[in-house]
Amino acid sequence: MAQLKVDYYFDPAAGARSAQKAANTAAQIGYDGFFTAETGHNPFFPLVLAAAAEPQLTLGTAIAVAFPRSPMTIAQAAWDLADQSGGKFILGLGTQVKAHIVRRFSAEWFSPGPRMRDYILALRAIWDTFQTGAPLKYEGEFYKFSLMTPFFNPGPIDQPAVPVAIAGVGPYMSKLAGELCQGFHVHPFHTVKYLDEVVLQYMAEGAAKAGRSLDDVERITTVLVVTGDNEAEIEAAKGPVKSQIAFYASTPDYAAVLETHGWDIGDRLSQMSRRGQWGELGDLITDEMLAEVAVVAPLDELGQAIRNRYGERVQRVGYYSLHHDVGWPLQRWRDLVAATRG
Image 1 (cartoon, helix red, strand yellow):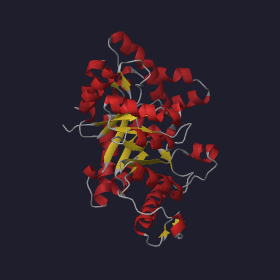
Image 2 (cartoon, rainbow, N blue to C red):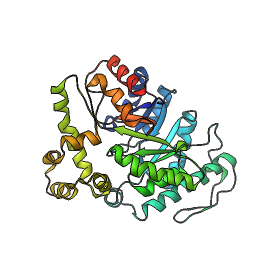
Image 3 (tube, rainbow, N blue to C red):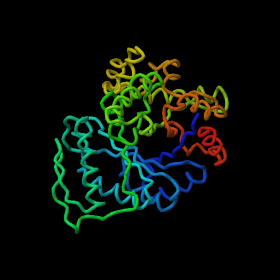
């Protein structure tokens, strides 16, 4: 079994000012990478500080929301981070869902899958112009770029092949990742059955279409975990994770995961969420469902349990429901990361 890479996921609520200290902590523990999400803060700014603080860490957005931004603005940010990190930046992109794109970002929502394909191809055309100085001429289905003067061209960098890793749940994005991308962010709401029968199958299909293999695409995920030093702590940890699973399961976009297992709870969860019954959603998640979605294990067995579950299915993992504010000494984190890596 190959080693897993284990990544530190920066708390987005902490704000960019704390990124340097967080990167120092990640390096001290022995993490391989440092990833940021787009929630209440911009996902790119903390990576600038992390790259300067700990240049050995791989950096990545997990994810940045693509559609409210022009591919040109993303191309510039990614180019600068690729340069600053010495080629250790992974550009993670996601579509988000319609309600957020339209109502939170006041942007347009249409054809998210084909539009993401066009977005990636546009990025690569822009980066080629940055690197070679060739005229910018991209004519896609949704994006068109035809102007780049020397004043606005940042010029070549030492590591111009910026890896793109998209996020997704269903067949289209899985297939697109296999065809065009260097990475794929597997949504934390998944099961082994769904990974094997949907995500990896469609990724392999997309890869074959492009003359590639599944090995050409690095799979990245965060893992929902339930752990503790004893049965009482494990039992206490179940509730919050069940609530998180129920929150995802209440969203129609993730219904395919439920359908794979024949779990007929999606509609009920959606109705409860519309009634504001957030505190009760987790009651519908059984221990059997929990064990399929999350890794449930004592702390001293957790790293190996993650390795046993994911094997060759993914190459990079992070701990979704286990945070560094629990008060553990660094050595305990070091031991967990080492056991997870293998």
